[in-house]
Length: 111
Length: 116
Image (cartoon, rainbow over all chains, first blue to last red; front, side):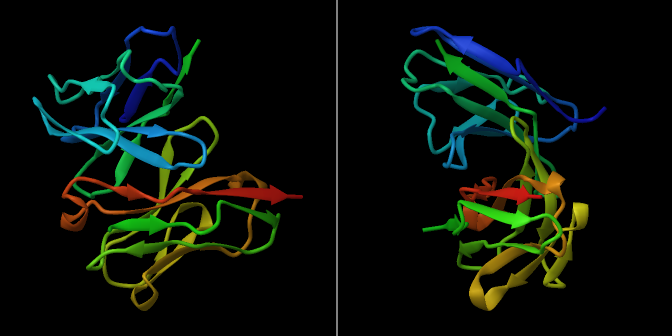
């Protein structure tokens, strides 16, 4: 099936650990995005990438890092510098029609 | 500043009643407009979109939205709500040159509760 796969669905992080969230797509879309969602705050843009080997910071990039080595993949690393990482993380792509296509999300919890 | 406002944090309607969710945007030109729906613990799904032309657009699941340029609004409507419509709804704008080319701006969302 065509779509966006995020893994894992649930992730637990200890204080001081880096963790990486996976996002894979087979829609052949150039643009990919990472959003953070907290209750009552909607979606906030962390990073986005318009093309392979290029990415830009979004509104809340501090404490996060990304890479875009392949068109299909856009992993997000939540570093120990992110002091409040507990949230729901959504990966999205954008095709020529400009609407966004979303994965099912990863819920990250600090333990 | 560019923004999308959804004035209602949550709305409760009875099953079978009509629904209207409000959305206002602030942009210099007519943007691309979207409504998305999110069930708990899931990603967002596109309900409908407006780019140009007819200001009343039809979407999936019986939803429609009307673009009103004079009011900078793009309200979502459904004539008869079903219990399965309970979810969170997001209005969004972009991407376009007004949003930085590749960014979509999302409203804060409206959570819909449906009572029997």
